[in-house]
Image (cartoon, rainbow, N blue to C red; front, side, top):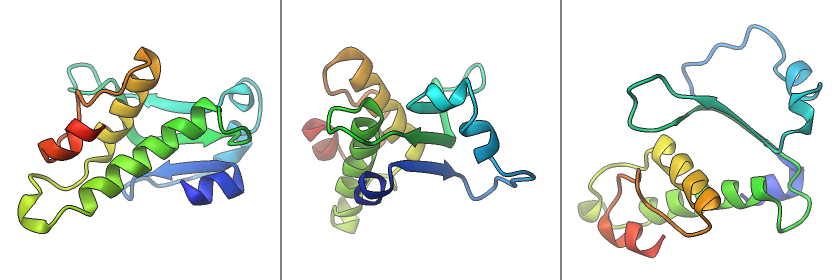
Length: 126
């Protein structure tokens, strides 16, 4: 989140992605250049609506930026899980759940932990 604020953009890719072309040629051209968040839908039947294997956030600018808020929420929630003592963790941070919870919170206007697969103490503080 700190890096995002300073640079103004974040391209997140899973390690199993292979880029065959420069993704910025598409991300910086219309219509994607006008979006603050570019997300990939998940497959039908998935537990989460958005696949976190590839997403792009741009335009950090103002503190009230929706993209900035989502990135900061994903970072905050992930860090909260990582900081738990090892025996208290139920599962490692799941990036897809963290992103979907941040998006659900942004769309509902209230913090939610519907998809979060973390220790209940972290979910309660979301």
